[in-house]
Length: 82
Image (tube, rainbow, N blue to C red; front, side, top):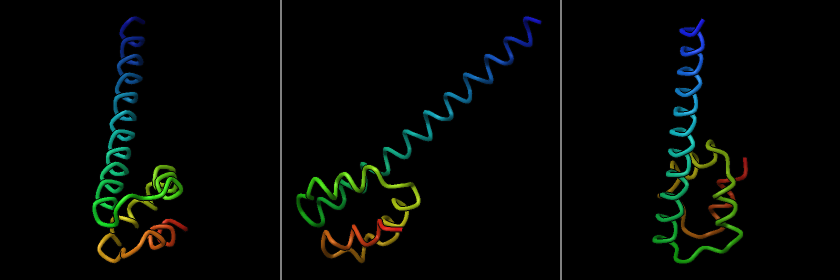
């Protein structure tokens, strides 16, 4: 019985670690995109920053894929809208 409890506990811990890694990677992508976009366009408005920080991972991926095509802040909003 104790082995089963230990196995369940280890599984729960592993799931927590995996979830933390995934969230960390997602936050890292957002941080990287905001840094790159700020360097490219200059200071971004609070509205744009919030749009990026609250965007889905699919939207962040689209933003990254279109990074070279972004010429102005409005382009970011267009890309983030699904």
